[in-house]
Amino acid sequence: MYLRFNLSRNFSPPLLFFYWVNKMVSENRVKEGDTVLLISPRGKRYLIKVVKNKKFETDKGVISHEEIIGMKYGDEIFSNNNQPFLILQPSIYDIIQSTKRITQIIYPKDACYIVMKLNISSGKKIIEAGTGSGALTIFFANFVKPDGKIFTYEIRDDMIKYAKGNIKTHGMSEFVELKQRDIANGFDEKDVDAVFYDLKNPWDYINQAYESLKPGCYLGCLVPTANQVIKLLKVLEDSQFGDIEVEELLVRKYRTIADRFRPDEKMIGHTGYLLFARKLICKSNKLWYSFLTGRSWKNKTEKE
Image (cartoon, rainbow, N blue to C red; front, side):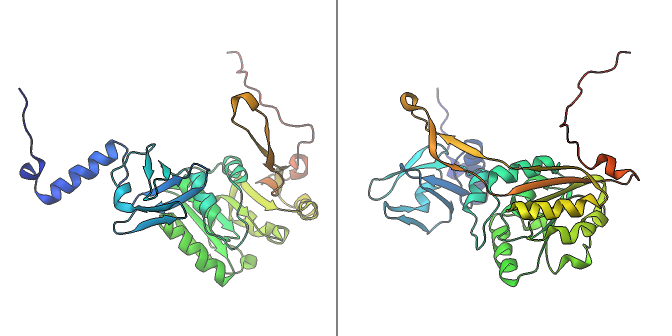
């Protein structure tokens, strides 16, 4: 015996709407307002916000947004030219890579490592100087939300406008405070958990970072050239920062054909040098400037 259930008769229109929305969420389906990643068979990626009465148009044809709504993530959809596109939820990596930019953004390989080294997590307060297009700001905000905050400083008018739009597009405005001014006079915030500089002359603002950081907390810098690293190190030698490291990350992709598995001809090589340091308050800070013999972690517990 089967019980027939007519949704339109048993639910009022508002309740019917929320029923279908909850159903799409629980079944991992696309709903209106979602940001969706569409991928062509050649690997071309498109990030779109699904809105009714809009169309996605490429040289491979047209897809109405209404056709995407209700589709399951991981499924494929066809254009009016019968060209397939894969439907996926975008990762933070996809969002960062697709961010509109007028300057070079920090690569995901560096951004992920920066988050780990600066110990960025939910509830933390982070200062960023050199907002640029806002890609790293968005990335940081994903980690500090819902209770943390990114305070990002930028001096250029065009950058402020661009970054503000990107931050809003990706729904991070609530977790970001954007400030336009020269940081030579210091930051408004005190006792923050980390300071990150994406500036051409970070050595000019070492004291400003020190004044705003909690003791023991983190300073990070990204600079593209060796000359900049050397100049920064010389200033840090006379500062109250210690545990200083300079690192560079390289990423190599591999061909995913089983019979011809090998490294790809192209790779993401040098994108910048990363410098990390921690605020010290002890008098003998030169003793802790850097550990030239390397780092080791002792996991053994003392015997009781």
